Image (tube, helix red, strand yellow):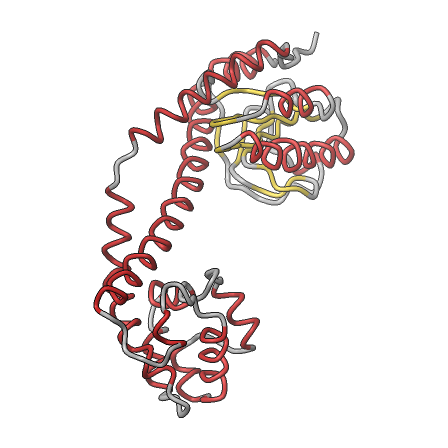
Length: 307
């Protein structure tokens, strides 16, 4: 008889969600400030230079060498984009100005450089840089406050991105290590448009497109069924709807339609804060098997039993 992943009761989902939330809180509270402080220090130096050059940038006749210098590397470009309120992305700035941010291109195209300057000054943060609008030099305390506020904005966003990506990467690696520990073979990843291109039984691959939707890990169980595993990290109950219902549930619908429920198991390994209500929806309505990062032995037991 073909084994099926366990379906959890509402109370079990609540209990596990609480355990995961407690672990999330502990991880956040114990997290060192080192990474934030490192980014803050780096961008403090960058913003100090940018703030001091704002008067040059505002000159009617723009010196393209000034703006090209401010675009010389990734950190400098990011800092430049963070002058606005709210900060904009490099892609947004390129789209709004219809210009490349490459220093060489800016030097050879004064019109592009001017458009970039004009866009940024049009939406420059008036609270961080009040002296620009008032056409005066900044007070020492205004300059210092602008550098601190700007550096904190970037550092916070960098840490936030690192947290999200690092947590997801760690989770994917834990799933892969688990599969390797029970004798599965990791193979080179490739697109899987249909079941014929899936790994062979006892094999798995990392993130790859599967029948029209990307899966974090794709394994073929020893009984021949494909298991599409999503690694999900959430920092709030509200965020968990997007992560687990909209994203994973939406993919499960595609996979079940294209490959068939009898041939594929959609699964999620979760870490962080999740709403039990959202978990109930994705398990019972979307037919997604749920596993927890804090209890991966459940996943191990299921995979081993699927023979």
